[in-house]
Amino acid sequence: MNQFIQQLSNLSLGQAILIACSVLLSLFVVAVLKQLFSTKSPSKASAKPSPVNPVRIDPVLNQTLTKAEKLEDILNEDIATLKHNLEQERVEVTEAAKALKALAIEKRIPETLFQIYSEMKAFPKKSKESQETDMEWHRKVGVSDLKVEPIIGENGIIITFVLLRHLYRISAITHTYARINFVELTLSSSEDVKLMVVRVKPEETLGRGVVEKAVMEMRQGEWVDDIIACRLLMDKRQTELDLLAGHREVEQLKDKFAFNPLKKRNS
Image (tube, rainbow, N blue to C red; front, side, top):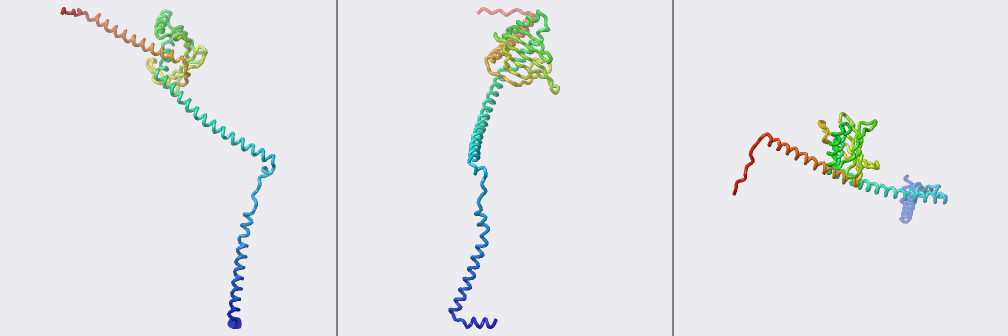
């Protein structure tokens, strides 16, 4: 070791610089080689070719797959259009149904059908004289040619009648659900076209009034004019009946309390 140090001390300045440069060059070469070897694996991995779909290599299969993808895009667009149209149609139909229900409730169509049913259901059990009296009563609301038949196998009746020169049919079936009785009324035309279906819950006492009502089905048409006219005639008939009852009360007072009418004084 002492000999090595002694030799270094005997070197000239130029030789020392040369040795130092050689050492630095050796270190630089070692560092470069180390960097190359450390980045060799990732570079090879990155240069590795991506796998190719075998179907895309075959021109016939590739063309078929391309057509299928285009067809799928077209079908997806058609489905999206159908969904949009269906949603739009659902909104329109819902609004139309709400409008028809509102019209039926406003014009008291369920109550009118139920009143026709209530007034006519016992018609066949009455005597001929009572039937003639009832028919005179029904003609005041435009009803004629009345016929009532039981529904075989069901707790209900079928009422066929002419209302304002048009033939109609009401099928009335009584249902019981959870100890609650309600009547389902179906109004049909002469061609057996279902015009309206309502469900009403009658009053528990007399069974002539409606506690609850629900419009299940309804078809717009000229028949609505006939039912509305019937409703107005029913109201007019009831008003006349109330006025007649009031007049009878006045006549009874006149019979019970006799008095001399006041004479007008001569002016």
